[in-house]
Amino acid sequence: MKFTVYLSGEIHTDWRENLQEESKNRSLDIQFLSPVTNHSLSDDCGVIIMGEEKDKFWYDHKGAKLNAIRTKTSIERADLVIVRFGEKYKQWNAAFDAGYASAMGKPLVIIHNSEHQHALKEIDAAALATTSNLSQVVDVLEYTLNGTLRNR
Image (cartoon, rainbow, N blue to C red; front, side, top):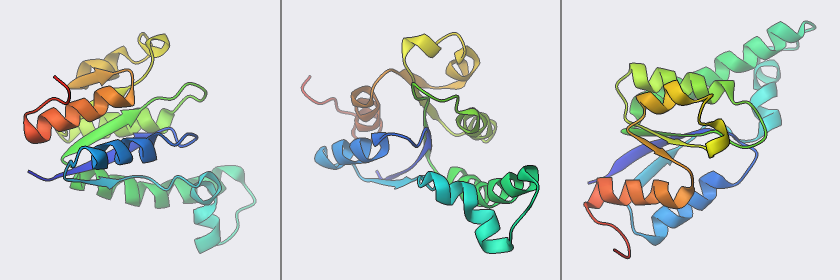
């Protein structure tokens, strides 16, 4: 079985690369999709393509709409959506992605530490798996795709 997985959430660490590498090491047949993780490009894409804005609201609005094309299309294509809530920043966009994916009936796997448990309880309730680290996520993927568990 092959899966298409959308990786949503914080963009300030290399969690996506680490997850993809471990999935590759386990020979999991997965196509990964993700948002643009270059923060400045993601913020500035709208004005770069469609022209400058003096008002910061419209500046952000242009970028958000362009990024939404990629996000919406990727979530719709995905068989599974993984959402990581990081340590440092509040990821409102990740919460939105989780809600959108849930509304579309996409299986959700959530990653966050115990510190965020209360704040994310509704998102956790919508998820089919709530994890605290990438190793657990790869275990979920391996079990889902192959019906096996590594080293067990």
